[in-house]
Amino acid sequence: MTSDEVRDKAFRPQRILEVLAKHDVEFILIGGVATSLLGAPFLTEDVDVVPALKTSNLDRLAVALVDLDAVLRDADHPEGIRLDLSGRVLKKAIPDFGFLRFDTKFGYLDIIYKPAGSKGFGELARSATEEDTGSAVVRVASLEDIIRSKQALGRDKDLSHLPTLRRLLELREESE
Image (tube, rainbow, N blue to C red):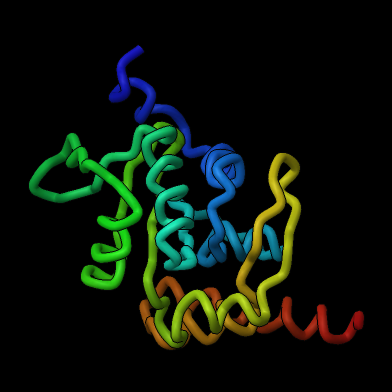
């Protein structure tokens, strides 16, 4: 089976997270997959992560991207762009571009430098929780941080999620 045939399969976020965990990549999960793990009923088409920017961690991320058969998504190149990835390359590319969008054999993976409304990994890590996906334990941004980011983004899709996320936060606070 070719990598293009593999890419045509269904989105499998759990498999992406398993590969990242297998390679001991340090990251904070944000976006739709994070909100689903925290109890929100939203669908998404990609996994969004904010990695720690230590070169050793980015070296592990580069190996995980190879394992995922990742290609950089680009509108001018529908087949994607293969990169020669290393921690050094990622350490420069992630801050320079702000985000990198990859197509993997299990679906889309977005690597984000500083999500809207945050200062990046260090800030998100302070209030992140560990969540069990069933096959990997991952660090997930807090609902407060996700809400702040969606507000800062201001896209219609993100703003439409805010009432549900705020209610979920209220329910969590009431149960504590």
